[in-house]
Amino acid sequence: MDLDKAEVERYLTILQAIGREHRLTDLHMHPFEVVFGAGRYNENQQTAGLWSTVDLCYLPPGTGEMDLAPQSDATHDLPAAMQERLAMLGLRRLYVHTGPRCFADHMLLGGISRGLLLPVTRPGTDADKDMTLLAKIFGNDPRFLLGYSVPVETAEAAIEATVQRAIRLWEVRALKVHPCLSGINLCTAAGRSRLEAILAAASKANLPVIIHGGSYPDINESCGPCFGLLENIDGIDFNLTRHPVVIAHAGAFGLDQPQVESTVLPRLKKLLQCYDHLFVDVSALSATVIGLLLSRISFERIVFGSDALYELPCKSLIRLFVALERTSGNRAEELLVRIAATNSDHILRKESRENDLVTAHQIFSVH
Image (cartoon, rainbow, N blue to C red; front, side, top):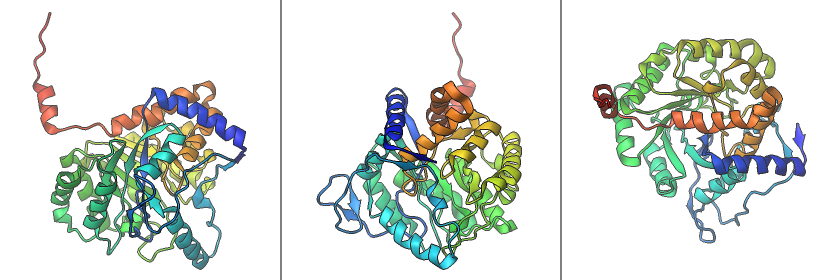
């Protein structure tokens, strides 16, 4: 589906007005390229708040015609070798620039005022180096919250201590798990045990968890394309944490509409019925698939994420709004606030065991 410039500007005007009244949050943003690895960034000498891999002029995003198809659809039918080459060139170009200026420019176009930044560790990744850079670039800007991905090389027994250390060093607010890129094989008992150890660590640390859900293009030898499929995820004991867990892409990344209808949605509904602290995000999904999700899943269990910079935040929010208009008519604005503001606030609420204990034992005076 394509929108002309006038339609795009109309939608952006609506979204910006909503964003002035409510804090819209993007719960799925990647500060660095995750497939082939973060580039070597230096502060841009021409533009404040910008970090760049090469000395190229920064051009802020503008408005124009918009193809609402997800970016991940573009190379889906190409041979694997061509996909890899195009992906490497395209993804490096997407991430020439990063930093508060770059991300905020994209966010503000759609009225989004807060973003959760999710790094992903792959085999051989220096997670400490990447987190130190992430905190240096974004850490002092309250518009951005930092996530953390447990290093691939971390022993299962050390996961809890590693997460606690990340909180102390970088004030992380969520854990990101990407079974495909991090090589967590959920088809095996060892892979499921590792994910459950991360969930248990998240519970101890009072952090939400965002898990990649769906397939993944086999463009990197470290990928396990099937590791994130829902048939593997639904064997996990999510009761190991009492905090929110978000299944990214609603478990449908890289899958076509018939697969979503026949396999994803039935499994997803079952999971959500079993665990009341599970949510899904709509990142990198087409408006049609989002519409299917909206018609089958309670709005209270859906959150907004874009998958930026792989997807443009404003484009992703327009895509969600279009799907809401189709499925809910004049309730579209109300439900967008629920999904992109209210539910996000719930996911990111900061809790502590001490606060829970105080509340449990608090004595209220009666007047």
